[in-house]
Length: 307
Ligand SMILES: NC(=O)c1ccc[n+]([C@@H]2O[C@H](COP(=O)([O-])OP(=O)(O)OC[C@H]3O[C@@H](n4cnc5c(N)ncnc54)[C@H](OP(=O)(O)O)[C@@H]3O)[C@@H](O)[C@H]2O)c1
Image (cartoon, rainbow, N blue to C red):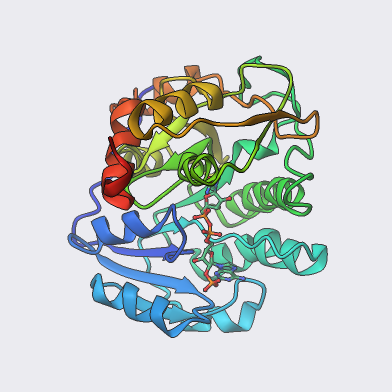
């Protein structure tokens, strides 16, 4: 059944991980219409200033440290949990990413809905087969980020447990490849192409993903919150178009003239596209065409490189 969007206007929203590539445009958008609190460790003074300049409030805390969350107001209406850490230290990353979700939900147990951002990196590699929400899980990203997939799987488990125990309506959204005017994976590929750095590709081609533009994820957040349930709703969250790394690099060549140098590597992540049936049923299709999104990104970040 399609989810009804919640109205976030004038509500109190907590956004964790606000300084990250994915959450920053969300903070920028919602700080204009709601009372936005943000939480991170804020080790860099410029990060704090940046968030405050967007009109959001800054709370300094570490999800791994339960007592540091006492500064979070107890009357938050909605939580968007984007925070993630990939230090490579299993003890800390599991404490921050997995136990951290539990610490946060316990603190915000009065919230009307909790939206946890997970990743399609929780799925076991399975070639070009689109992964549905019940597909086998696995340590997909171990080669680049040793703790990432395992701690994202652990975080989902803690999230489901606390949602049920504390009766907090919750959605777990498994992001594919989020991108926008401020960056994303394809921007790193453009930089590698510019500098002649080889791009590792899984030999089982094409390497498909579902890039999701920030315009789309910002628009879908109220629907994802509307889909929240105490038996947490778990749903894939990507763009409705399936696009391969090979295709987006070819398009970057069209735009910039830089040629990719691909290197086969059986240890590269490999294709990780998603089955969109449940997402489309719940929150509908996305709108931004991937070519427009990439052209806009380059126009914003490196206009001098466009031909
Ligand atoms: N980027 C992608 O391509 C991608 C793909 C799929 C899913 N996702 C998911 O999307 C979300 C955002 O990803 P991202 O790439 O934007 O992350 P990011 O750029 O690495 O940013 C992480 C954010 O989390 C904060 N943070 C880190 N450790 C923390 C802790 N212990 N306590 C509180 N805050 C902490 C960081 O600020 P401080 O360091 O100041 O604390 C920062 O604001 C994550 O859940 C990620 O798994 C991302």
